[in-house]
Amino acid sequence: MSSPQPRPNVADIPPYVAGKPPTVRPGMVSYKLSSNENPYPPLPGVVEAVQDAVGQMNRYPDMGSAALYAKLAETFDVPADHLSVATGSVGLIYQLVQAFCDPGDEVVFAWRSFEAYPIAVTAAGATSVRAPVLPDGRHDLDAMAAAVTDRTRIVLVCTPNNPTGPAVTQAELDAFLAKVPEHVLVVVDEAYVEFVRMADPVDGIATYRRHANVVLTRTFSKAYGLAGFRVGYAVGPAPIAAALRAVSLPFGVSSVAQVAAIASLERREELLERVAALVAERTRVVEGLRERGWAVPEAQGNFVWFELGARTADFAVAADELGIVVRPFAGEGARVSIGEPEANDRLLDLATTFPH
Image (cartoon, rainbow, N blue to C red; front, top):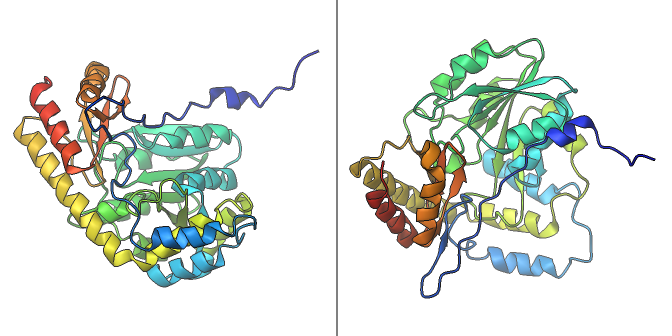
């Protein structure tokens, strides 16, 4: 007698590799630079709001996330029915593929890009179509547009691109959207949008308002420092947002996550001050790396990318010996988050001694 078998595509799902915690070294403070986390603690007032919510943990969360939707609508000046929340922006990516793709449908995205894309696509039985990034780590939007076929249902644009770092300009996105058929859903993944500092940055809200086939995905995990609570939101035309809510996991966003997100939005001005400090550290790190001869791509997220090829594992080991853990991508390179100044100093020390 045979045992129950999952769908054949389940065996093909690539594993998600999370950033490792730092190695504990006696007499040395170790730093985790492997998951693009915000090194700052929660904003003042957020912990207190969460503590109040914890007292109601015996009750189910508001399944409609009404208060969070209202705060998001107020903050970004969008209708509440143009919003959908989920367990981080990655949860929204899964839901988008589930809602818009039949088995065999195609999803186009840059590569290397966010590791969860091929996982979500394969889990839905859809087909990944990968367009290699340009040598400087940017999206090759012309190649992505050319990869669209009659089977394409979704195109994913990760800006800034995780893990390579560059972001798409508004002019580039507009030119790309002009080439994509209107029945193809374009997902602009803006998980790191708060960190962008560049000429002609994408205005995601304005872009979705001009296009019936554009949806934005964002998260509270990075800039807002709520990675442990898992809450993200999508902004898109009402029919797309409704489809996302229809396939969402009931009670998926916990009560404490909703409260923490609202409290963080109420303190957005303080948040942006912290983001500015991280951007200043990013600038210091990138300039320091280039002074040491490293040709790192433009960094518009809260991380930097080292293209290392076969030396990637050695780089990760050398970093660990200095008390910092990075995120290696075997045979390709390493992504290193911008962390505390001391952690960033150790990265620069590593860049001084590691051959390049």
